Image (tube, rainbow, N blue to C red):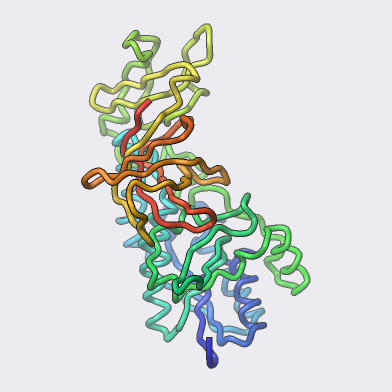
Length: 356
């Protein structure tokens, strides 16, 4: 990057974003902080984007001697992310709100906000890498595969990749904390937020019930096996997720797991461990950073985490069909399937169906 560039750093008050800002200052860039204000009445008091985190971000910005701005996205966050979260559960699906938040809020509204303030680039503390290679910008896994966050960034576009900086993609979390301590950052030992930011105490059942107490998915119904035999009763399909074993409240000779949710019939369908495995899935709302030629031999993740599996991807009308080389456990509608070519993220979509 020629000349002195102006970089906005998405600051949450945590160690990752604090170190991101400090490193870019060290490298001679003109840096300022931007923080999203997303907090509604239900927010976790110590989650990202809460009032407490805004205060911490301001303190870190003051320590680094940079300007700090707050963007009030509370209304759009509630409409686009919180409502989506509730609606997906009411459909018997298990959403990943972080994926949508990154798409619509952090790299949508906040990206635009930073540009309005004159930023040439937006930097975040995500553990992923953006590399210019073979004549194009590529999104790649972070070096620390246990911390890799490329999964939640698959909705980025080539244009935005050229205007985003991810300095921590080359570090492990241990290295991040050690370097933050060396630089005497006040956030060096601050704990990471592990819960969904807008769900207090990670109690999503209470959160959903407060928003939609009369919905069909929250009404009592039957727990049945895959043959239709009634084994017990439940207090709402939305309170269960695929692969769940605990909290079923039924006795059986062998362990039983949730294998399907039927909102229309208010049924939670359970089966043995073997019945939790799927040969393939379908995906909708697909976004490609770079689309492959179909059918494509790729690797994919069906949930956040380090594990990938080999697969064949076919374009079938408006959806994708993904055939696994080996059956995968607890493939869950509403989660994202993200496609990789080695370390590079090519794109992803939302899981809409499975074939057991």
